[in-house]
Image (cartoon, rainbow, N blue to C red):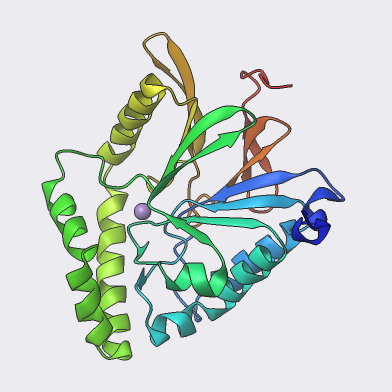
Length: 269
Ligand SMILES: [Mn+2]
């Protein structure tokens, strides 16, 4: 006999409208980064209305597998994510190019779902979510690098390193990688092309981060129309994408509205 206690009534009696939040590229740099506290406060402010939190990668500027030094650096954030998932909020974490090898620690300790890419249905619209790195086919160096750092062998090597050395090396590597992205406009064009191909495949919406180019971009792929959503970043744009009442909206972290997809009619009653 089904038990009512297995349900999560807290999610059903939201005081305000129900919202899904999508955020990426916060690039938190550990305990000394004051933005870790800012981000936690942002989550706390929105806690009563959030149903799902989608982290679209690069929330942590540096995570490459469970190491005590990394847990220490991100403990306040990890605790906040755990509070969210314990409150019944779906925390769905897509790995980025700065935060990967999240499994099993982030799933077990935090209660988040971890994905490299995932599908979701927002208001009846079939959506593909991916951090959005590695799409520029001409960028062979990055593709090779990605294969190396995502490998089990890399994970084993870093697991054996002393924590302080791993943190030091990682922060060097991570800032080099950010500078590299900054002058990489082809990334965004490659994302648009990729989004178009997913729309042609049958998706209605494609969500990515990584390019630090926030916006809601209507795209056409043959006869199909779709929407490419880029969640932006918290380094220069401080953007968040919300989904509520059947609409995607781009807002600033402080709530200032930036863009709303008024051009897309709600299809599902
Ligand atoms: Mn990225």
